[in-house]
Length: 316
Image 1: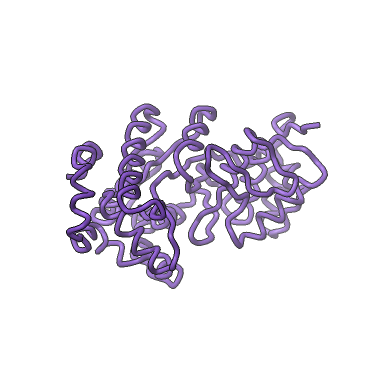
Image 2: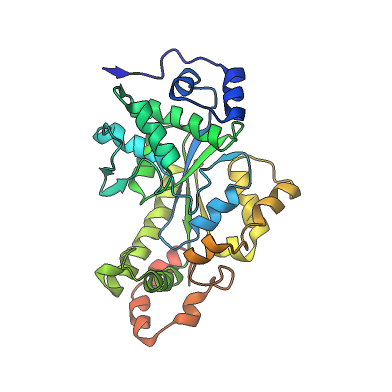
């Protein structure tokens, strides 16, 4: 029998906060405290190699955002549970596939979240959407950020995020886009660095570029259709006019853009620790127009076929 967590929610802030301080949140305590921390979900949708990791690191510096702070910020528990609400919740929280994308319950290496979820789901059949609220409570506790207003996750593709926004009236989407030509070269460089073929390059160069352009075109169209609960942000502005970009983000969430807040968020854009160096293929700020530096004659014919579409999404 499905146990609907939505029924009989209680507020037990004092005992929950005590458990948070002691970092002793148990399964029993998490269930008892369900609903104590109310946050709205936001999905960041982008094509790979568009700056979403830098963007998530920037948001993580503001306590208004609940983010699982494990690099490269790919915890997608809420998305996993939404997908599971459509296709079924595996007893052991194994990966689920929805709309041709596969979702993991926790980011690779995040044993803390995965084991807690498994214990929570052990021997019971819970409503996945309600379970997601308990997991957000748990994330708030282990991140010591129980005052957050917005939970933010990186998306995979567009379809799941679109469906989440259509069914959850408080959910939002941020579309983070970048010049398709720069994405094209960044994908190829990243794959060489990791000795892998991913992000669509396995289909060939022409098909890779077509997928990038069509994906960004669809994001633009979808953002217009969704309206005020979505926005389109550009990688180039994040790198070239970081303060304005940050204030635009805060405005989208109706949050304060005091200088102290903006400075704290933008300070990590140029943070090149080892995790960032392993993930990047060049300096992000120098990477804004990387396609002009990396351009090959053989690629010009590929790009020229999509000149009209490039203009439509704001790239001449």
